[in-house]
Length: 255
Length: 263
View 1: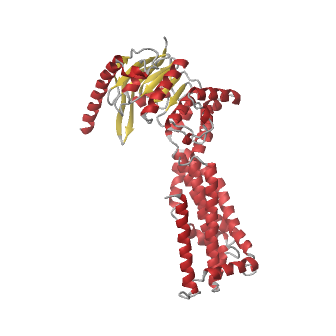
View 2: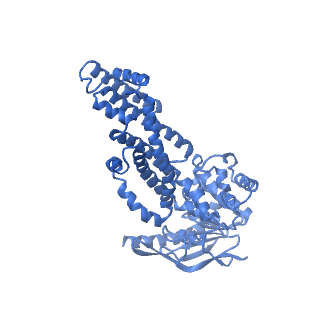
View 3: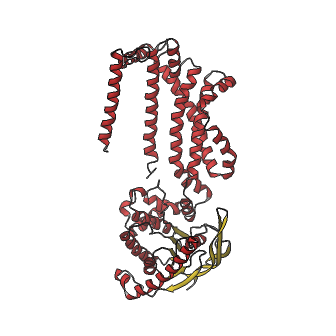
């Protein structure tokens, strides 16, 4: 299927979904308590932009969520990439560390929210720690997998060309692993964004998760929907941005 | 002529699925300086294992490999290696790939750029110097890989089925290209191939391996004119005769291997 045809179909499908949504809500087939109409959501969004949510400007909520995500994710990336590369490179480190990572990976981060609150309270640190922990796992595991996937021919070719151990790592293993590292960063960022909202649902005075939780508590259903949609749009934006960087930085990946 | 590579009583065994696989058995072979020697034999007969022993990728379990009289203990830039998989660095341009060895060994930028430029011109890749490997055809990628191996000016070139994944036409061209390089550079070349035609066309001697464990079944001196750029040589009577006798030997070994595999 051609690119334009595919794009056209996608736009068409979204338009149909919106239309159904409009008919169902504006025609009063569904209570606005359950599903507000797109029109109401857009109106409420404009109100939120102009007046903020319960006295706090909307951008301030957005920024709160974004900063937590960024802080946790950036710290994780800085630590996890070297850790993952080291684990992939050293069989000893791999044997020692990988069992912990393998057990931790299937555990959802939200399962740790009560524990983290118990240990560190409901402050910023707890939320950032959760994000850190989640993305750290994914980035580490992917970086390690990247090193392990370096073809042996490539290492042998480099050795025959006269590299020493340090050069082998920095000029061959590291660049060859980069596509994997990037996959890890993308998954890490996506999961971080999901976790920050979950953490804010439990305990926060600001953030998109807070808007959703507070909105539901006080039956401001339209605000709940605005919060959910904003999460989706921003998550989509994060994914797209990282993909664009990826295409530039590791242009050879998959070719 | 001096012996460049001496393979002395080399045997190699490795463990796979808990069983010991004997890959090579008591192989003796001396390659003279400036010779191009091919090794043919059924798949899995250990010819690549032998080449990797010379490259220093593996240590034979018995016997030893000598280069200029010195035992091989590790890979080194005195022995350039060309792989069937090309093994180019995908994140580097063609030029950067060729400069890789000299750069790692500390050659100044001007020298290595000049050297890479000459080599790329030699194989007709000058126009593609700033392309990435994935932008090139298989034949061009393999030419880049060959000159990358030559950039360190190694005295020995070890080639592991380098043209195996190319189409027939590119393959013929690459063979002529290699002959040209060999005759102008005077390198000692050890060449592994599946193709009997290729072995005869390129080599001064063709070594026929038995099925596993690989032993030398026969060494054939190829007596073709030194200058082989006339491709009609490939259909000359001498060529056909040599091909017939090697094909017979390879076939015999392949059948033996089949019988063994079928139980």
